Figure 1 (cartoon, rainbow, N blue to C red):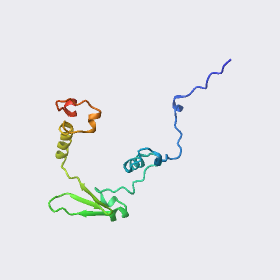
Figure 2 (cartoon, rainbow, N blue to C red):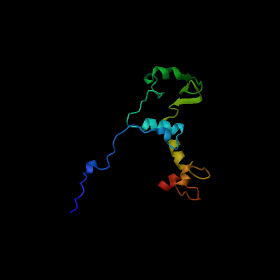
Figure 3 (cartoon, rainbow, N blue to C red):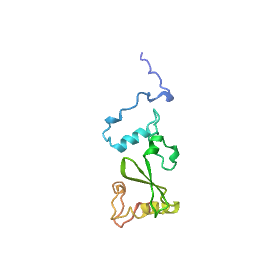
Figure 4 (cartoon, rainbow, N blue to C red):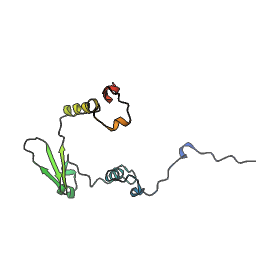
Length: 140
């Protein structure tokens, strides 16, 4: 007589055991962006945000990060503009557009800039017809 297999309860099925954090240095696409993305998306242990710079609330930054932030004065613009010591060329502009302008830019990005002759990564996933319709036209 054969023994019946031990029943598996639904709540115990396919449960992953928590072990040490994965070694992300062995990923095939280990670019600087992907490395940072993996570091901040990890759940165990929770990511440490101390090295993240908050330009919208300067006082929330660590003392070390506060020393890296350089305010830039642009006389013709009302925006808050910052640069970072050690990263020449990187300029951060806090909230450069009013909400109405942001919405219009989003609309244009979806309705106009996806049309031919512009080439985008959407071309690989969507069959945008030769009449120049963009993804916005397909959605509507």
